[in-house]
Length: 198
Image (cartoon, rainbow, N blue to C red; front, side):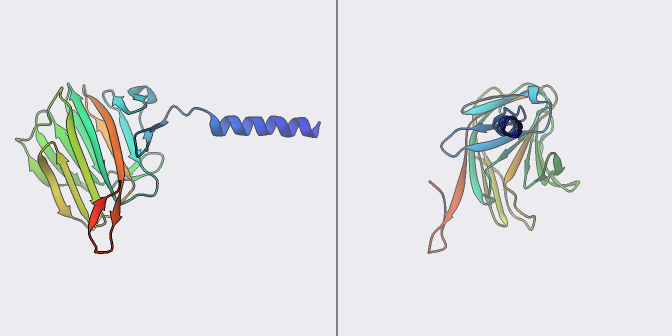
């Protein structure tokens, strides 16, 4: 009887560990990325090499343990008000502190906020719609750089603590497709040069 109870408990534990969590998935690119949905899980459709976010979806991207990284991805925005990208946020089971919020608005351009203060604005900038756009985020200790296509939209030093998560949020009516994201660990060489890991 004791063995039977033990076996049932073990099976239950394995089911919990190996079970499918609808709020978590992994993008299996060359450098895999763990994803966590913070909104309704039906708002994100995932596949092996990326995901698609429906309007008002919130999703975190993470590569465990790599707070210094170079992220590269292809984004396609469709319709609506645009999207937000949060860099250096504090997250647990929800977004506790948004960090730097990049708002790519269809009507107001680009705005970068932190702790309720606007750091930079570019009302003329528009994130291209319905076309695949290559973006990069370079995050190294106090330095942060973000490019959208050929445009560097942020290049600054900051005292804000780095984190191993980036959060994306689609705004009203917008859909965002993220394809082939690569979260690359930054390698430091002996000569103090920095390069993206291979």
